[in-house]
Image (cartoon, rainbow, N blue to C red; front, top):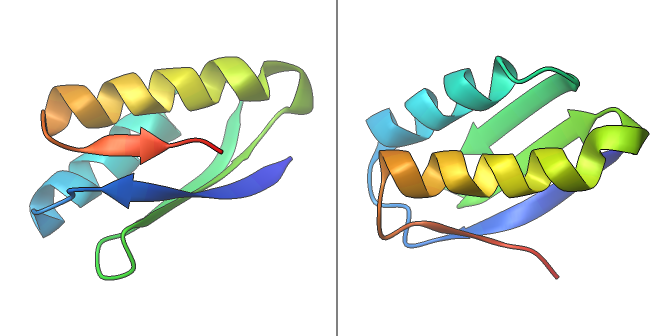
Length: 73
């Protein structure tokens, strides 16, 4: 499954790169892209683990940049 999410209050391009690297290391992630200029995270991951991986990605974003949050609709 592949889906894009809005990243609210992402203020640092270096932090975006760190988020992308950390999320890419999660088991079940096929591909991840964090676009700083568009303020978007695109996640391609295994269907059966997708919801858990989105939650974990949100935690990683918050840990790297405390004001940043992943908007899940």
